[in-house]
Length: 99
Image (spheres, rainbow, N blue to C red):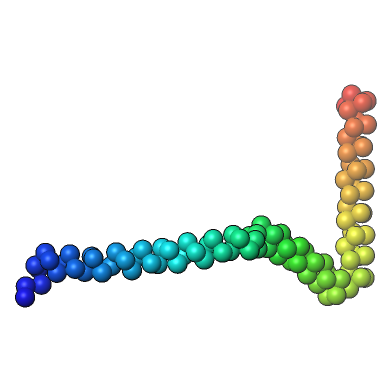
């Protein structure tokens, strides 16, 4: 029998068509069952993951960063902001005087 015989290809396609139909029907049935059950919403999982990550970051900050370091950073930031504020006030005073 010649492998290029069109009837051979026809039989192969005839066997594949029901198999593909069965696969489609199986996937359709699974999706329909999940929709009926009210499966998990992907957005809920994403928001829950974000909340968990934020909680973990906060826990790491509380646990691993010493309070003295946080106070030191806060003090240095406050000092820097006060210096910037005084420089801006000086510039504003010079502009009011017309210099």
